[in-house]
Length: 267
Image (cartoon, rainbow, N blue to C red; front, side, top):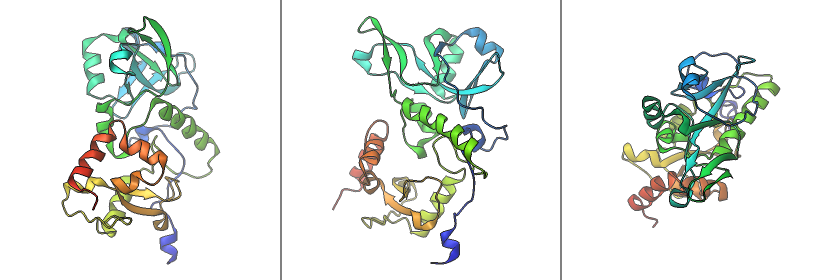
């Protein structure tokens, strides 16, 4: 194998906030600090103490002036009927409707897990972990798959740890992928002629190529050397290990997985 194939397709360095990964020029992300969950108030919205962006929700610390990335969730929910409330990480359609309605006190902002939720079915407050991601938020970041609120909090923690400890400059988004991962993935799948390297499934239809993923063999999402990449269909990607199976066949991604299986039944 040539020297070029041993090098990363793109060379970046440590984790930065989701905003910067989308191409906006912002300063160094603030160190992660756990904040107590708090109800959203009209004053906080109107004063800009909470900032809703297409690529993140940020809360301003009144003392330090630092901005911390947070998520929002409904603080009162009928969990017996509907399960856990969904959480939101960006200015999605649901958050737009929430802002327009002015019903701010229905939502709590947090950057920790678990979080307090008043369970209307039980008539008491509970600590709830691993909230599922909002479907509208997921539509904005579909290529990454659904992650729980617990995953999101760990990503925020790891982002700042890597930022402080890394001597280089590798830019990745809050999900751990390099800034141009979508382009890297597309280039690699094109080179493999949109054919699964595990089962041999070849997909001609452009729209159906979403069912082919680029997998990091060693699990390191910033190791984009060609030898660490494999083009896999959704089914083969889900069968890599239990973590991939959980992520790709449950929650919001279950619909995509089942659609794939109907279109491309296993021979």
